[in-house]
Length: 82
Image 1 (cartoon, rainbow, N blue to C red):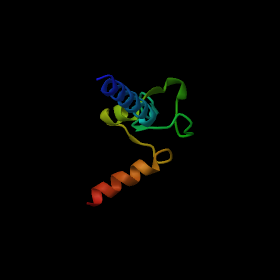
Image 2: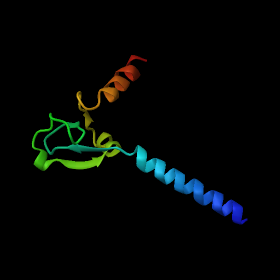
Image 3: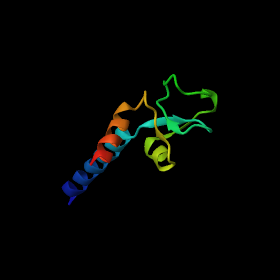
Image 4: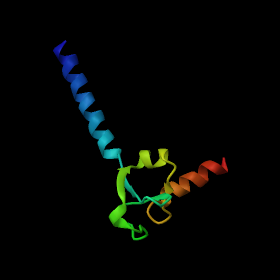
């Protein structure tokens, strides 16, 4: 029983760490329509930018910045070609 408990604990710890590692923080601006990496030079009004998870930005209908997230744009066009 103890062995199963320890195995479960290790598995839960691994899953929580991997979730944190995969979470990606992005920035958006109040009047913008794109999400960016914090270091993006295309972000205007950085002082008004807010940080959120990329998943949340997508849920709020923000689209990826063409400079920061070329891979996201490519994935989107690949999906629409199908």
